Length: 99
Image 1 (cartoon, rainbow, N blue to C red):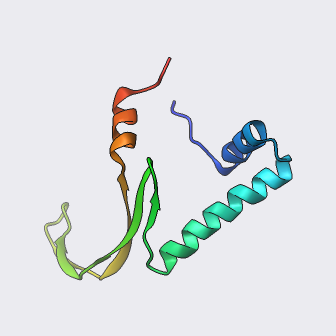
Image 2: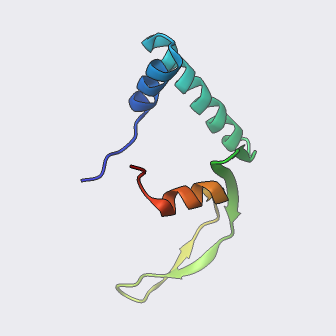
């Protein structure tokens, strides 16, 4: 079973590594995530050095196909969130867990 990193885990890491109180650590994590979310909602790109870039992409309407029935189905235009990892992040993930 794989572990999922949560907001609580991030807050706990800030608490342990930075030395803020648990409450302050939680508020800091919430503030950072809020700023990222707000920027993306406004259509801005979010670039975190050595980590990656989050951006919004507008996808046009198109005709899709139901794979089960083969029936054509219209797919409405929409905005999607994309993430492009940095080269350093790609290398770190490819190397796997450090000992």
